[in-house]
Image 1 (cartoon, helix red, strand yellow):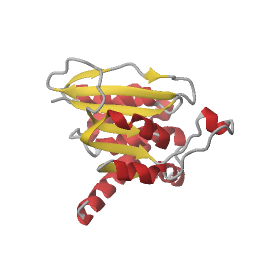
Image 2: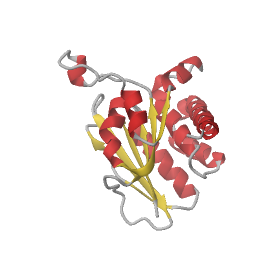
Image 3: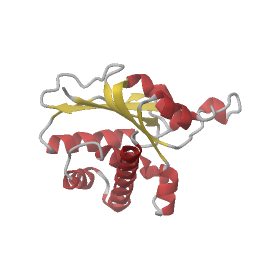
Image 4: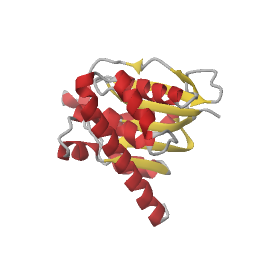
Length: 203
């Protein structure tokens, strides 16, 4: 069966780039690959989704509700919104980042509290990562959160690290390659640590 990956974020967070990087990496690893166009309102602040499928033989680029192997999210509320995409037994990877949607920014609604805790309780395999702190402490711009989370996803996929670097160098503008490579490594390391900790605790 193909591996199905849904990316979810808001406009300006780089959902499309993450899709392209995964598409390129999976293709370079020899998989049949399909990806959909970004869905939703791609302007800054609007919800954005992207679908990537790869495997031996992939017929369609669209991932149906309840069939995503991985849901990779760059913002907490977007993770809650996209959660119906995730298959039973699938893995949620989410950056613990809050971006106020328009009604909250306008003072017409409140941002829900404890979203991270709710997500962790709602999904058996959930990895909520403090990407903001990790990036800030390493001097990497927050705009690299998409590649940080792609690095976290890479800890779950059997792709060579050199494959990811080739994809990055092919698709990222030269002046942005180094911070993105650093962000990718940070995300991968963070996920590896969390996976090891869950294994030790029997989670």
